[in-house]
Figure 1 (cartoon, rainbow, N blue to C red):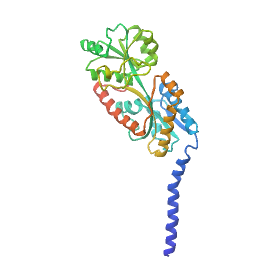
Figure 2: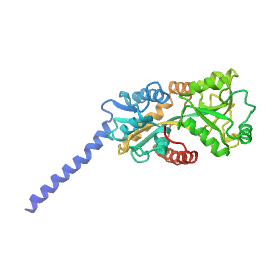
Figure 3: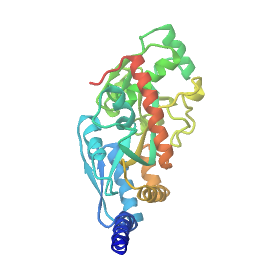
Figure 4: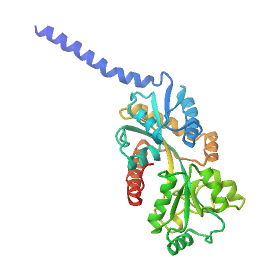
Length: 326
């Protein structure tokens, strides 16, 4: 009897060991089939362009196809929810950005929790905004602009790509930190608002760099400052808002790769290494620069910290400015 029980325990231990070994073996063979990268924005958008550039190089690094799945709707929430609810097996990834993982959660209740429902993989890059002025505005520096705004509360208009967009929030953060009041004029994109800025129908704009770059170089618009933490390589002579008298000011649209929560750490680590290698590629760096994106690979831990920090930051700005989802 004792011998029979010993045999049962022996075979049970073998079965238990096989059960635990199976996931480890699967992780070692990963990836064995194509990987889906869910992009919660339309084809041709800045986020989609970044995702496709990274997917190509990531596929080369992993010797496996990475295909783009554009899941559009609810300002990115539809696709992001699909990532959160996907199987955590390494075959479903998501393109995340400041909007999906910080701003959206500050505006409304979401069907996902940014800090719980995802396994951060790596930052990809960030795009600062540009504070551009109509040349007829009689200011040369950020401090001049602040002084003018204080002398004429709400008399100065600033354009953005739309209500509750990050461009809008960069203006709201500027107002909050400078203790001034401006009038927000929302558009449907930077390209549209740039036309009115050129005609002087609005005095200033918080917008992406590429649509205004040619006008700045032609002297038709004045580049006052960039919103990033450091100067932009495309406009190295243009200071940041932080170094222009508002220390601590920073607003950038970052892009990142995330996976569903529970994705094995070994797979996340391999993805992280492959993304970092892809971002070092000169072709990727040139394409990023053309689209106003600065490469910024990171550890999963650094991405997790960025999400937490930005959630707290934009919640406070949105609440203090009374901004609501449209």
